[in-house]
Length: 231
Image 1 (tube, one colour):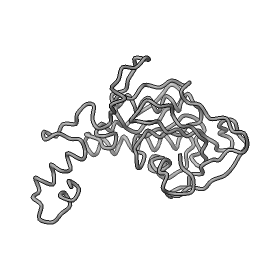
Image 2 (cartoon, rainbow, N blue to C red; image 1 turned 90 degrees about the vertical axis):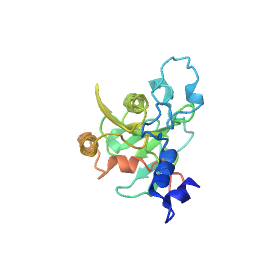
Image 3 (spheres, helix red, strand yellow; image 1 turned 120 degrees about the vertical axis):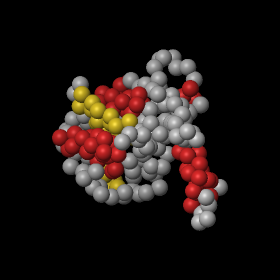
Image 4 (cartoon, helix red, strand yellow; image 1 turned 30 degrees about the horizontal axis):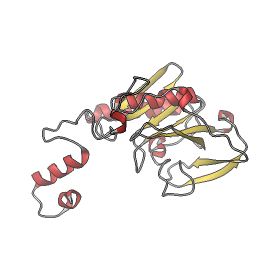
């Protein structure tokens, strides 16, 4: 009903703004609640690990990322530059191989502390490091692609710690663009946000990614309703 009211001709502007704020989890004063809507009931429980990101999801360890054992050829997502569609190939592989542009992809549930889903993907071209994003249509879990599981974990944890955002890591370095409103939107100044996003994109290219918009492509790798293969 709020969506209909916000977009219906003749609805007062104030009513439309209030409806949009409710959808985004923003208060009447414009403030974003610290725990909503990027948190979950499960995420607010006490963790045995004792470490939580700002949105309530457990901070992960490298041991949490496990590529399932395959009894035969493994299905691999092939990302296509500028496309929502993907291709699919089958390979005999037990781990990532940057020389063949075979990388890890992971999806981390933001609504519950469940183990990450891990698979292999081709098309991102990373020779090192990893990138992660809480913009991941349509469920907006955390999605990440990386050359190794250690960096994959670090990139995801940067997003978790920031309460949502885009991140990139390599070696001991890393940077993140926080998206504190639902893990989807920034509360920063437009020019600063644009500069941070440009910096992340440049960093991805320095790591070998040849995609025109690495984070845009990444955001659709978990959208299961679009073929051919997603995670």
